[in-house]
Length: 255
Image (tube, helix red, strand yellow):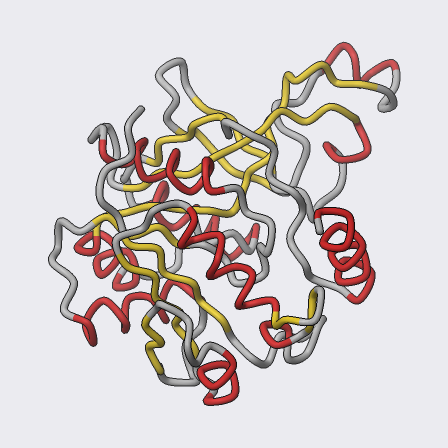
């Protein structure tokens, strides 16, 4: 698929609970948010916007070829922060917006383009990516979000639980390879700016509250989410000090 014209919007909140000041933590001597922005620029985005509530993050991005959108500090999620940017910057309702998390310093440009192209084919108002799960440890890890999709590639459900449940196999054991029968969700999204605004006006549903997964709000409200397989591997994001150490090691290897 050929990627259409798109915007990449990066929510970057200073007060992360598990890794305070996360966007400004250094990877190879530069703030993490700078690495994420470079990945967005390398994907060929028409415009790259960092949505933040903190002047320190804005200052760290000075001189980068992007726009910093200063937002309110009371947003419940990065999606809400991006919706405020959509209004501040006057994005047209049909503009394609890729929501790239601010803790993905190694997000592949190919994946960013792929989620935009998937959205542009018009099957659903929102798109995301997934990759096969290869081992049972990941399948049973509640921090790894799983999903199932229909035969046309539309999401049926997202969960922290192991889905689909392999009844006969798991009756015997829960170890070893799972042969790609389950999918891990990659937390990158694309939507039109108009649907982004609509999304944030939807009330959180029961499923979202139970699973603590914002994308379930979309499904529970009757909308569809297109799910594509990531064209290349997505390295893990950075949530903890251990993740940050691994990111620094990876950056040194790449340099």
